Image (cartoon, rainbow, N blue to C red):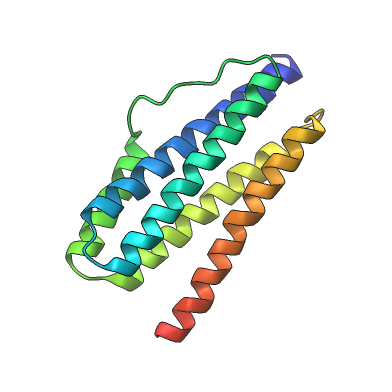
Length: 149
């Protein structure tokens, strides 16, 4: 597989992951009764949509074809089920931990792509910006959690 094909494949995988994360957050928003959680899920869903648009643009710049989102994979389906259960049982600490783990997994996926050789500069900048935004949100969650506990 050529380097550009490998990069396009990984970018498309990241794009699909962002579609799935957006879907999880938007479904969680619809299920939540807590206004703070609704706001949080709406913001994260919007962020996932924005990231997806940027990634599609990077894929197209590399003359690739962005993958379309079909349905949640098993992994993200389980995450959504966990979100639902934690909200139903009012286990906010567990819900926050699941969100934190989701963000950590996203960062790892971004880092793996950023280690690719011959990654175009504009793509690299986009990925770093998105990864850093996820990391910043993760740190803000941890700080907030310390005040809640």
